[in-house]
Structures are given as structure tokens and as C-alpha cells.
Figure (cartoon, rainbow, N blue to C red):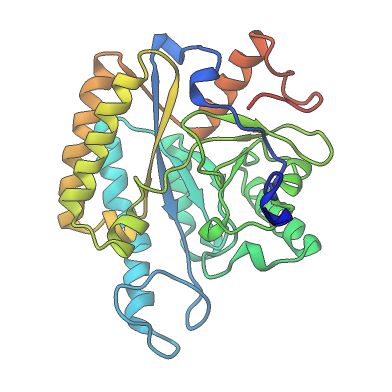
Length: 316
């Protein structure tokens, strides 16, 4: 056999393989087995340049069709979604571009007033983080953190890269610039620690690629009622699986998609289904930051990782 087929494949070195059946057992608050969060992606895009999801074929700049469709999310869709979340008493993990502070600061203020967790999501989703050099990437992470602090908000604990685009150094730079967890790595149903080059703690919190309106509705062209049925089916199955071990279910929503009235109607029905289980005490509706903090404490108490802020965790 050729030598190229011998030995392990190149790897990231961030964590070792550890099947979900080999993990320590713990529970979420109030004995819940399943933690659920809404990843509410509130984004802004440069006019006439850069990236962005498209409802129709991209036109030469300024591409008013696709820009205006995305902008509907900030002007209308996000507010309709927040009305729904308020009605159901649901918090969100709000993934925000810092460009919103200039464009529509009242929307960020509304998220803060609700008590939502603000999560770093780059300056704009018109740009990919993975194309940056180390200095520029560090500047982006520091900029987003400082912008939130400058507006009187808590320093963000979590990060989701625009388009989930990383460099090979992103986890290291996140830990070094004060972030506690990343949503970029979508490889598990439990929060787990990652290795970083300086031994600083960085957690991965599960973020959905399937229960995510962008790939399902835009890429697979799934109807809203089918996407929302996915949410219900995924929830019901994970609720059964979570009887034995703690699991995390995220739902990724973009207001220019799910804030459209006919989609919002189906989302309402799906979330009402989830809330009935919440009201029976079967599920913990929360935020990614709270999930990270609880898992950190639970595994540290079990002696499986070192407390946050100390030397590198080794689980998973």
C-alpha cells in the first residue's frame, strides 16, 4: 500500500475524538435534559458591495433587489420576531454585526432591553473573516468587543464568524481577546472545551447547520412549513435522547427570512409546541452563554476539566 494511505489524516488539534456515549452525565437547571436556544442573527450588509444571501440572481452593483430584501429584516422582520418572542417569553442569543450600531441602534437597544445575550458576529456579513491575516483578524475581534463595551453593553462572551468563516488561528485569537466560547464548530450536541495555543479556555457551544433557515430555505429551497416541522421533529427526538444525557438544540433564525409574515406564522406554531414542553419543566430555554457557563461548572465539579480561566481543559 502507498505510504500516503498510512497513518492519521491531517487534523486541527483542537480536540480529540470522544463519542457522545462516553461522556459524563449532568443535568441542566431544574433537572432538564435538553437546553434550547434561539440564535437570532441580526445582520447588516454594505450597499453595492460584498457578500449577502440572495432571493434572486445577483445583479451588478448596487443590486437593489437583494440588498432591500435583506434590509427588510432590520426594518420589519426583526420587530415581528421580537413580538413573537415576547409573547412566548423566549430569550435569544442575538448574533449582531457591530455595523448595526450606526445603522439601526434602536434594534440593538430593543434586544438589550429584552435581556437577550449579545454575541459577536463580526462588523458586517458582507465580509468573510477567513480571508483575514492574523493582525486584521485580531483587530476585528477586539473591535467588536470594544464597540459593545463603548455602548454600555456587556463584553460579548461568544462569537459566530460571519458565514462561519475561520482562519486556522481563529480559536486562538478568540481566547486571547477575551471570548469564552465559539459557535463556529458545529460538530456535537454538547458544549465542549477546545485547545488553544496558549492554553486559554475556549468552549464550543453547538450551533445548528440543519435547523438553520439559511441552508434549509435558501440552499435547499425548503418551504417554511417544512422547515418549522423540522424544528418540531428535531425537538421531539432530542427530548427523548436527553433523558440520559444533557443535550443542546439551537435554532438559527434570520429576520429577513423568518420575519416574513407567512413564515412567521409557521414559526409561531413550532415555538408554541416547544413552549408547551418548557411549561411542563422538560426543557431549559436559555442562551448560549448560560449553556457554556453551566457546562463549565458541571464538568469542573466532576473533575473533568479545570475551572474557567485556568490551564487548558482536556475533555473531548
